[in-house]
Image 1 (cartoon, rainbow, N blue to C red):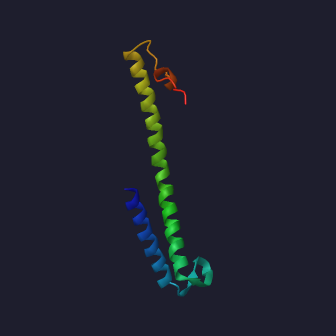
Image 2: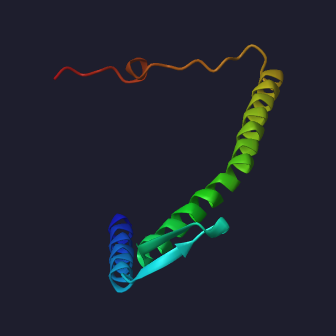
Image 3: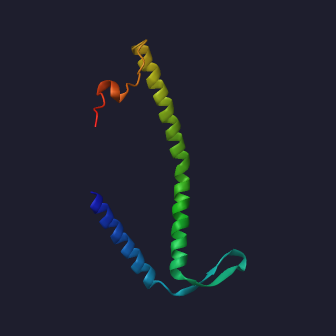
Length: 106
């Protein structure tokens, strides 16, 4: 699976590189209020809008992610409370690995 992911990354990198090499023409970028930038490579404009769109999309996912984290925390606390009610007096104490399997000398 790891090799498949690396092969996919390589394919995407080569595709983006070829795309960048094909879009080197210069363009004029005009903003609102007649502000403009002359002689900007087309690939720079396209990649910057892609990056800004990606960042904006990730920013939109933050509230939902925070809401899910709060709900998971609330549900874990509720689970701990229910487990304590079902099994009173039992606490989950972590047992050291050395107590179960003693370390052998080298």
